[in-house]
Length: 309
Image (tube, rainbow, N blue to C red; front, top):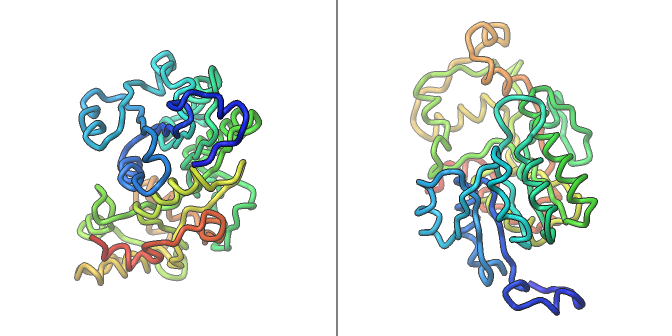
């Protein structure tokens, strides 16, 4: 990793090395760490914020330096100020409300001392709301239809306004459905075994996906290659409607295809959370991911990804 001349060159060597802080180091964060050996960050240190003391040994075993703290308890975050040159923010907002106090607490902490040079935030493609199946570029205005998506929009704005305007290279990854056979709950198998219905073809919605390993690689590349104040769709090349996705998975697993319902019947039978995903249809463009971040998708389609081990 190259540093510009001037004040950086006058810093002690330990401060010239890249230092990555992962906030919200779950499955994707651990995948980023496993991939880190191929990047410049391997010459520095990787830290991870965790609110669970029981999780610290697992993080240490992967080569991560764990830091005990909780985004819901801002005083516990003081050690993060000035610590990292790069920040990967993977922590979700709270489950209630229309704002994200966790991201606000992180922003206020990072602003207390030397700012990181780059921050990547994993948001959601749900910020666009229903697009009636249209192709969606990163320039499309957000139109969040759920409180869950509104919280993500609030987090994006906090980061871009408070840190981006202060000179931090903030990049936003808008992420669709994450899957992987080696991820907990990462395949449709359990849902297929339950026989959960999908919409009939005439009323079905387009859905988007990304394999967990490709998402980890996108996070890694955005940390080093992402442009300032830039949005990227972390989505694969699959163009499928939701029912067709579950049909393809059922055929792959040798299971019965799910029953099809009209939208009216689905509204009467299915839980609200599931219905919310069936109410938004869009197809994400991913040229920036492939051309600007230069990510070659390892699993460009869900069929390839579901067959991976």
